[in-house]
Amino acid sequence: LKVAVLASGRGSNLASLIAARDAGTLPVEFVLVGSDKASAGALRLAESAGIPTLALNPKSYPDRPSFDRALFDRIAASGAGLLVLAGFMRVIDAAVVAEWEGRAINIHPSLLPKYPGLHTHRRCLEAGDAEHGASVHYVTAELDGGPVVAQARIPVGAADTEATLAERLLAEEHKLLPAVVGAIASGRLRWSGKAMFDGRPLA
Ligand code: GRF
Image (cartoon, rainbow, N blue to C red; front, side, top):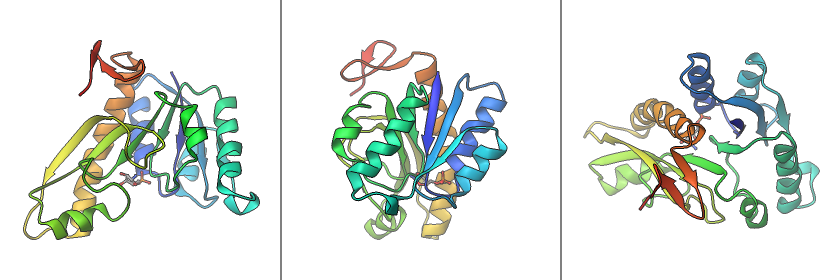
């Protein structure tokens, strides 16, 4: 399975995917790591892992859809069969997303459908939730709205802060995302108009 990854930041989720590949537990080929930020740490990680990289500057494009079109043309050209959004901090144009229905997943640091969007740890604390978590979902035009395929949960302690939650959750994300990519690579998790696991529709 050829995998492309989009990231805007440090790339710790990308690092977990590369580590799983290097450990032999994730039989995929990374064909591209793309970013909207030339300074993204994820690009440095990809370079040192020998993965082709691409940084496109949104300011070089007249509008958001034309940036997305240019970026996704390059992803298609890479031959990727799966696109992983791992800390990609842009909402992607609906028409472009539609072309990748069933072939693009995102990891989001909340127990979706709770807290789509930003500042999920803070919102979880403010709500006084007893649990927090991360979700991997198929990407659709609705921000953080696609079918959830897997979640990781952590308890919220009285002493927790945004920082301690984020740190503890990230450790779970680093297990969750490789597990989902592996399930897709093995064919256990598939998309045929809807998410299917071992031949059964996911709720
Ligand atoms: C993670 O918390 C992920 O859930 C969210 O953005 C963060 C990405 O971190 N989408 P990293 O760049 O993978 O370290």
